[in-house]
Image (tube, rainbow, N blue to C red; front, top):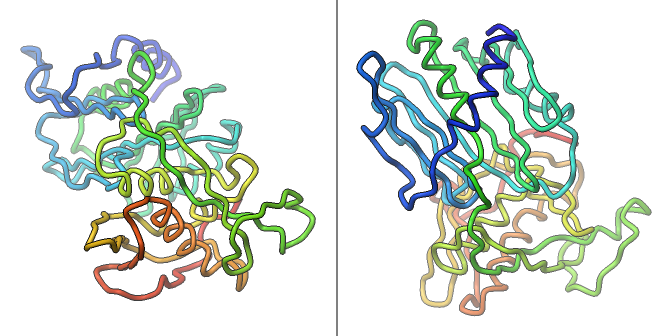
Length: 316
């Protein structure tokens, strides 16, 4: 895509933002005589929206309500999601991390608060990634499409339409998430707490405002825990950010007073013996902060078993 086209893409963002209505999906409302129909998706939790071809279908809605995955009839795949950005990481660092999603990057265009990368995905399909920083949120679009399955104009329209809606996401309930105090690993973490000891660390519960507070208190708290992308929150450590690329929250349920947490994937980002239990500790202690919960069971890929490592994972 030329620099001129990209400038037009950015200029079109303001007009492409989606009005704030109540429906996350709207179909058949965006069509002209010479263009295919487009639908729209709006995420109220992180306050963003995107337009996409109306023949795309939802293939996955993550349990943490951070976004959606849509698939086109010819193998195109669109994923859009939001995350909290507690730490002010520069866009250059986010671009470096986004490059890991590509087998080859052919073009990078950006500025202080957003960037677009074009290239080839590891499976050989064409890939576009757009990253937008909005206050304490990071919004990400990943569009994969085999060659000649999407017209260039359709790709440009999808990418240009992705962005924040006017205003902030609605404020919902307050939940508590479990973070960790790492005093045992050296002077790097000088702050200490009086939280209960679990493994090598102490547990610290931090109150968080949840945007779009639908669902049970248990589901809202665990969705919030998995949505935080930064290693450090309010001075405490968040190990789950290290393993989020390989471990996902699929759902939660209550069986009596026992919380059953359903996950898929494996642990990553492990660097020592203290790391392996940290994800489970954060999940269990976040669930136990909900008054109705007295016990926690974690199921991975449908089985009641311990979390297992699956590789080195990303580091920061």
